[in-house]
Image (cartoon, rainbow, N blue to C red; front, side):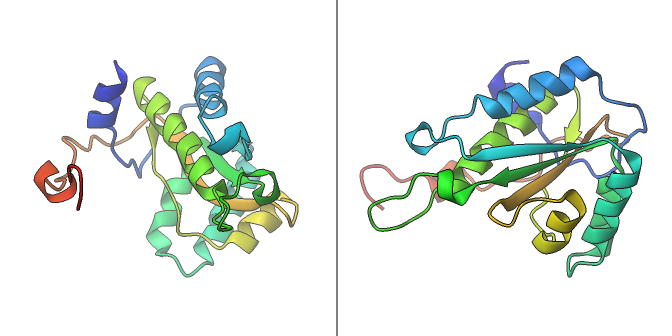
Length: 177
């Protein structure tokens, strides 16, 4: 599969088979995240790979106690959960103070998601979570921020074609707005 095919076929998977993810595939996926570009090449990200069933369940319950939709905690029953974190102090800042740690971590996450798709695995980008609960469960230092989580595993559902997207005429502007 080429990268454009992965972009076109990637879907948010919310139900997973219990099958474990092969170590080689997991390492390739994490390597794709590590190789992501970042502002000024600062690479402010950290990836926490959660495979221990007890920790996964604690993370799921921490997520479930959040304000987010309770049903989304079901996706955290996948055999692997990758937590994308960033170190704001290590990230580049624009001269006006705009911080890029979230952007950098999001680029790394996209590399992870697309590589997982290429490997036949499912993911679901989760942004609705209680950061303090997640940090407590995973013993994340105070200066580190949690940007996103994704379950990782073999899909137990087939989502079909990608849902509707806006047309390029709605979102692409040439030379000016």
